[in-house]
Image 1 (cartoon, one colour):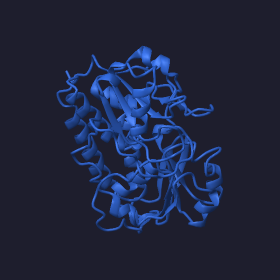
Image 2 (cartoon, one colour):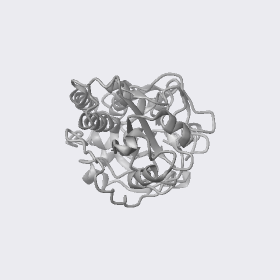
Image 3 (cartoon, rainbow, N blue to C red):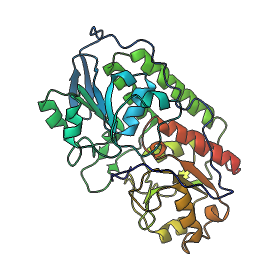
Image 4 (cartoon, rainbow, N blue to C red):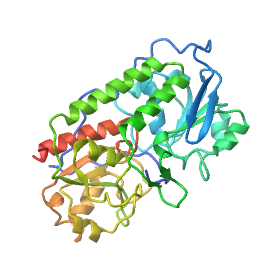
Length: 349
């Protein structure tokens, strides 16, 4: 996800005739909260290897703070709302099925919170989806939290074979996979003393992927993923969450020749590659131009460089939340929606 501030707003109504698909199976079902994890240190302390660090959590967290929406939605799906003291940095409405649980957790900021706000909650555990949030230039570094005795956890999808040292959104040496996401689920379930819930959630997510991709062969189909910005659009490179979606469906990303997470590409190059389908981020923030799908589509259909592309003329659009375009449990939603779109366009093999 381009690492820029966000603010929530309503999404404009979409033009008539646009395909807006909704995932129909299991979305946001998660795990019933049930009994709270046992604070009697069953399985604790827990020690994990995480993004080049050894992290030890002495007891089940009771005042955790999750600094990104993706991390929060994992914890909510594990039935851990009562263990969360706060959450921040959101691009979209909460996943369907998690609204009630999410309403019980304090949103300390729609965008990146200050370290003072986070520390004011007296957290005993901090998790994040992106190094840009939990690192240099973010809320605070992991070293700073460690000095205060607060263990931290960073999504392995943002550090494994990924270089975040540049000015952009990182460069990947190899593609992220759903196994990276499932590993994060299992790690967080272990930290909170609910490993069985982690296995249940992984099984549910994997089952949804299998159901969505069954019988699809999109090997002759090209896709382009547009996250944000109309002047210098952020488009997906080979190896982030869009790469995982594309790989599961057997399709081809027209910008799979770059390992940048979200390279900015000019529209003339986009038109030259002429993808069969445009996968469009439908965001509810206002940080960039053309955040909502409606505004993106309006741009595509009026811009001289893009309006004659095959996907635009045939209105082959699939709309995804921002979270579905990041490595998260919502990536499963992305697989479901893109698969359904390919079927509806007659491009599924």
